[in-house]
Amino acid sequence: MASSTPPPAAATQAAASRPPAPDVQAQIQDLTNSTVNWFQAYWLQILIAGAIAFAIVTALYALRRLGTRLCRPGHKHVRARGAWLTVVGRVAAKTTNYFIIMVAIKVVDNYAQTPPLLDNLVTFLFTIAAVLQCAIWARELILGAIEHKTASEHFQGETIINAMGLIRLLVSVVVFAVAAVVLLDNLGVNVTGLVAGLGVGGIAIGLAAQGIFADLFAALAIIFDRPFSKGDQISFGASTGVIEAIGLKSTRIRAYTGELRIISNKSLLDMEILNVSKRDHIRLPFTIGVAYETPPETLARVPDILKELVEEAGGKAARAGFETFGASSLDFALLVDVPGADWSVAHPLRDRLLVLIMKRFAAEGISIPYPTQTTFTAAPNGELIMPYAEAPRMERQVSQRG
Image (cartoon, rainbow, N blue to C red; front, side, top):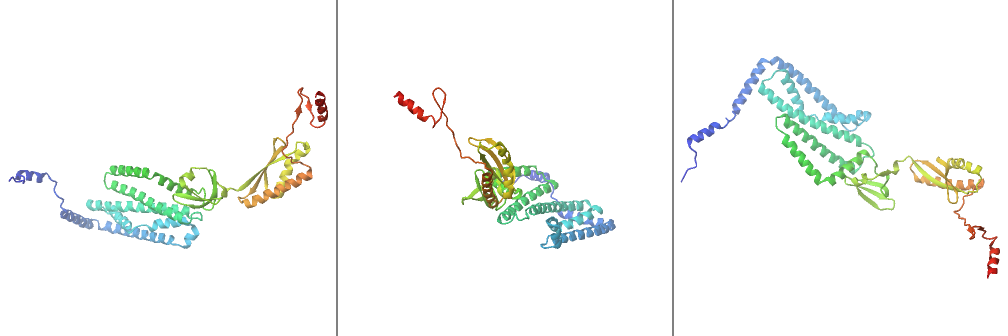
């Protein structure tokens, strides 16, 4: 039976080609010796740097305590200065002990000329602390800015709570993913493949769930851009109704006829939306016909009469004047603006104005004619035939012919 053991010469050559294993104990001993020598040679610089580091640590801890106090609910400075100070306090309160300690050590390392091995170790640990701390600060600042924008009566209820939970998750994932890439790059790792993989994975996820993400981002656009809010009356497409709820996937609208319409957020934003609740006035159009037999002097006074009646009714005349020659009347256009968006005010004003117009026109002798049509009859030779006066003569002519 043949043995699989390699010949002694080949084994010796393979062992010689392998890199020697690192001697950890020797490295630790070397680091210890260099550190002791460093303390002996630069003890004064170390003491000065230590004092500076202690002052920096004290200042950072005091800043963190101040931030914690500022973001505490009901603090007097928060009530006096508003929410932005609370955001700054939250950012300062998220300063970690690890970062504070590493800042102090880095100060000593830069000032006291530490040995190369110790300097590399401090730089490595400080890079980790700085990148992670910047990621935490960036996340808190972004979330604080978003919460500051949504801190009003327009953003209350379950929708904004769910939205903020999702926004917090997305912001955290993005910020710490970027921090991880930056940290690996600073540590000398080739992150080109990692970034490419993350990009391809993100594209695949986006394509698979593009409908959900489209409605989600539309919901965020509605929440932050505020084209409408809960309780607003809107018109979209051929429909009208009142906003009852704004969800992350769809918006619920109560139609004036009683039905509850549920429409996806993306489809809703793709339409032209008329926010009826946000208009500053209601415009009432009128077309008033006057008889052709009205004297020109009276016709010239009709616009002023209409404006006077509008002011008497409590509205504002945007336009009052002659419009066109109608089929059976001279038509005047009247546009009345009623301040506000309340139809319970506009409708009674319209009714009062119609009654005032009828009374004033009756007093002025201005006739509002019915739609009429006059027919003229002609004989074969082109002469007009009067419908009544000439009828007996025409009958006698017909009897004579017979």
